[in-house]
Amino acid sequence: MNGRITISDLLEAKRNGRTIAAVSCYDYTTARQVSQAGADMIIVGDSAAQLVFGFDSTLPATMEIMVALTAAVRRGAPNVYLVADMPFLSYQIGVGEAIRNAGRFLVEAGAQMVKIEATGAHLDTIRAVSDAGIAVMAHIGIRPQRISAVGRLRAEATTAEVAMQLIDLAGQMGDAGAGALLIEGAAAEVAQVITKRTDLPVISCGSGPACDGQVLVAPDILGLTEGKLPKFSKAYGDLGPRSVESFRAYTDEVKARRFPDDEHSYHMKPGELQRLTELLGRQS
Image (cartoon, rainbow, N blue to C red; front, side, top):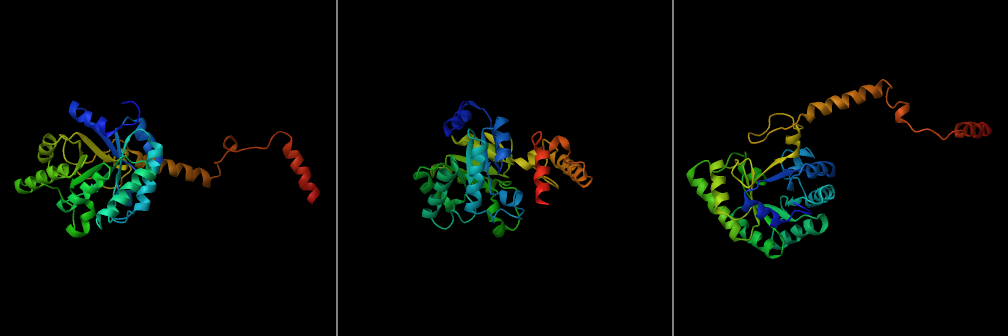
């Protein structure tokens, strides 16, 4: 794809069976690398609350945080399709506030789409935001913003009855004006049914291989995440241990006064040190 990727490109990818590669990241430097790697989409997720700020859930992410991070990612990756996550309480309070907050991502941060963790209760919100000219990705399946209500996140749609509910919900999201779907943590068979039934691009976050695209968070991909990864995630690098080694080598050199050496230091122009010595001598 040449130039900035648009929703038309994503729809064409779905029609042609070309898989959409998406990454969730939160900063300028990583976004540059993701863009250079040829990814189609970046989702600036509210998981930044956990992976950037160290909270134990996504709930502390605020509009101010998310707008700033999204703008940084846009500067690093000007041509990827950019999706911004609507954080907790940015769309639940009222339709007017949802439109205003969604608009901030487009105007202030350069996002092309906003993502809303949606249930049937949010259909009017999705319709209103979409009617306002703002593309919406409806996030269904596991919804991390509901952690306080459910207590523990677990795989979705693993029974036929719940699977039918998720399939119906996906259809309702499309009817309400959603421009794309993200399915998190749902049974692969169910995600496949949804993907086949809709004309919308469907991104899988731990929902099997049959969706139109896949997304993982950048720290998992790079091997920066400590501890066990989620079942659906995969590390493609080992930057965590290598980063610790690099920081340790730096720390050891600093403490041993081996860094900085002459090669990594600036020096006065020829003859200026003697002049400085003379000037200092006049002061004494």
